[in-house]
Image (cartoon, rainbow, N blue to C red; front, top):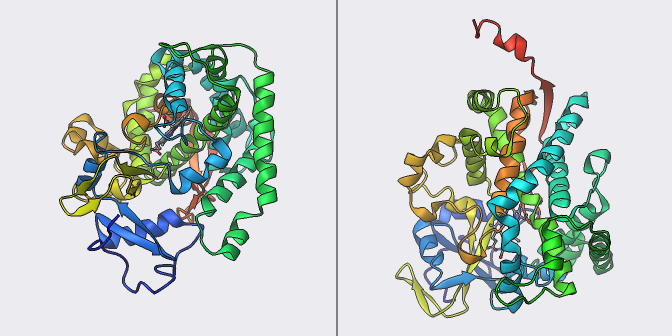
Length: 459
Ligand code: MNH
């Protein structure tokens, strides 16, 4: 698009542009730092390749208008097609397989489907608490939340057990996936030697993709015919036309759902625990809710949505660190954005969500962790497009309800069962792959002594 008049960092150089200071490991955090100074719209240019970023709520409200814009499959997402092909996340909206798969898979995310997943989610949450009961030192929160979410999507989606809690190291699928995601993301790095140093070799990448596809093929082979995602894909046709998904697309969907179905939820749980353990008074409030609503019972399906405050803690964690940290929007006609910036049909911009979620016009004191922002009365006062952790429009997250049920359930169970000893020296450090997660964040969980806590309180 025509970028004249859009701010950029001072000191842009010929040829390399804004390269200096750009860290290939932290593109999102670099963009945040730059955006916080430059305002609601800005560009970054590296080797003649200029990208427009839009983080202001007003402009994003225009971009989220489905009549004028749609999802752009570019940058990070385009590269992922090497891994996930025309799976739901990486498909172009105009590819027939997008709508076909969307319509076939929608029933797997209905309220009724969530009810079926609940026992599986509960079983996996118990594996987490068993692991934490047995831990005699600090636990790596993000690693254990990844075990939880991978196991949950494996079992609920595919009837497959990764055995995450029985392994000291991640499952080989996860190791291959993390490397393949990093490889895909770093294909945007323009300097070949930097790219190779950070991303690994094409041979390694081919091997990683083979590890993933082999496992998925094995899972499809071994399917036991319960009512899960895989089952829908293999047995159901389109609700209107009866058309079925082809085998290559099913494999792409399986990889997509395993990846999209666990990384983000794991990060959201980890950030929520980070903020709650940094704010003991908020943790106490969340736990009081769990105690009041669940007591020491195991939660039934309908108990999960009753944890309104726990849910707000997750919402607020995903405001500060939306674990899928952005999306791209493409003009579907010639438009003028914000009455100023000309976009031709096909021009696109990136929406870095942590900037949208910190726009001071919608979020007073944006850096403060405050779950009460999500009380219904407060939320109603905000512009509708100020909070988009699950994306927007018809290409928004299909797994939202799945993720929220799983995350509220797991966080509720953890608050119900443990006190936490924190490492006071820890400062939040965020690793970027496709998603965001706290790095090196540990807690020491201790099973609560309810009887002792209640002394004096109950008379
Ligand atoms: Mn999910 C799309 C965030 C959990 C499966 N997801 C998206 C998008 C965002 C997103 C943002 C839109 C991306 C874009 O516009 O390019 N997703 C999340 C977050 C969580 C999450 C923050 C957890 C927290 N997602 C899940 C889970 C599943 C899932 C769980 C599956 C079980 N997400 C998807 C799929 C898509 C998607 C599939 C692509 C949907 C489509 O384009 O039709």
